[in-house]
Length: 313
Image 1 (cartoon, helix red, strand yellow):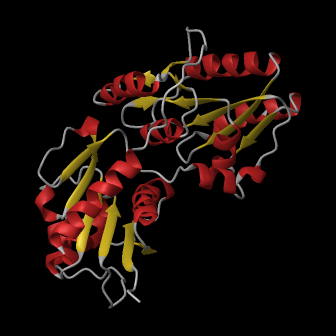
Image 2 (cartoon, helix red, strand yellow):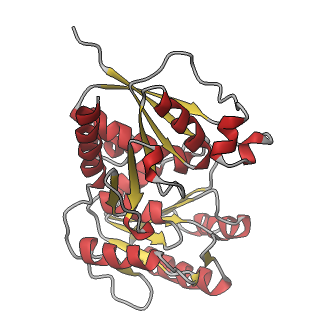
């Protein structure tokens, strides 16, 4: 009996980074048997701050097993150096995101369209890979219990290099949320690691006044998948490209929650999601929903990687 191929997931362990690589691996496993194991690469220590080539030259230890996998998928800066080393040892390597070095250092690069990366071994996709699938959402469905016939889910981010969460944004978002609650909607709200504490505390107060409002503040098991599963509409702060594309993977109506700042290259993503998934701003517009086919970039990326793998190995 032929053994299944093995795949390592390399990242710095942060959920949002690791999930991009895991999402791609899981989509690949749906197409062909694949044993997946995750290995976090520490961000601490002096060598972790050096460029990837210097990390390799200085002999950084990544605390990886001696055995080698068939494939390795990495995401985030800390995954670059170990992927480059594994490639020299015959491992088929895949990097998710723009590595900011030549894509030729890897067998395949899966990069967001808005980064504008190109190459024979590069596939540009809308947003980034993720772990969203109907089966995964249904698996966690019991982690949240709707108390109304209509459910709105809010995915809240925070300050980033391009965006800021200012008082005017909080006011506009809370007014929208209250309008939904007053109209008989159940509202689930989940925050991210970048959501400021004062904003988490502000929205938490609604839980005392509305039994149809529930907030996940980052403590305990994360009901993120359950919130997406039950949602009839999804609202996402526009700082988070990952959460925007994850929401569109569900095929449900998605609206952007505007934030202060200048989107820069992310405007390309907003435009693409508007054309592909009917994503519109949630403020100053009606909430008329439009149907679209669920975004399936994971599957497209998985097929691309398998095709390159079987031509190479």
